[in-house]
Length: 123
Figure 1 (cartoon, rainbow, N blue to C red):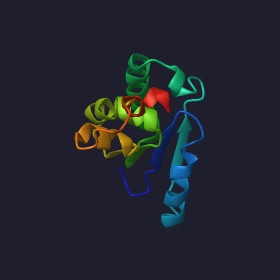
Figure 2 (figure 1 turned 45 degrees about the vertical axis):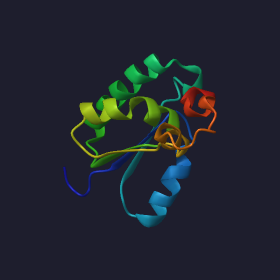
Figure 3 (figure 1 turned 90 degrees about the vertical axis):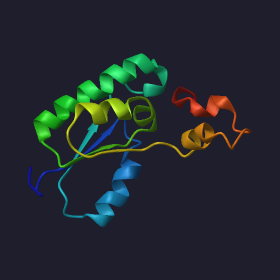
Figure 4 (figure 1 turned 180 degrees about the horizontal axis):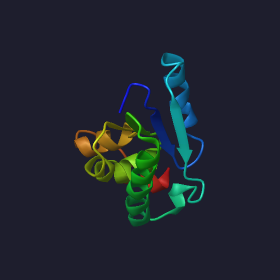
């Protein structure tokens, strides 16, 4: 892998473009691959089991094809469900986008956060 290797952005649709935009502003010359899983969009209608199986499998194939230097999972749902599995499956840096509400709810000090907010399928 060289510094010419792309940064791979993965999302279930086009929402990850909001994550891509600041990266493009900071690294205007970086090669980027944006992959959207439009075949399974939207992830919010899928079971957690399906996402947990689908995302690592897709990312393994994408990494094999594009040999990126970094993978950004620019999808809250995919990150909250499959980030650990993707990190275990791939030997390169993986950045996820986990909404702040989930770690806050798991922290335990914030007892007033409704539990439905901690489920990625509900947002």
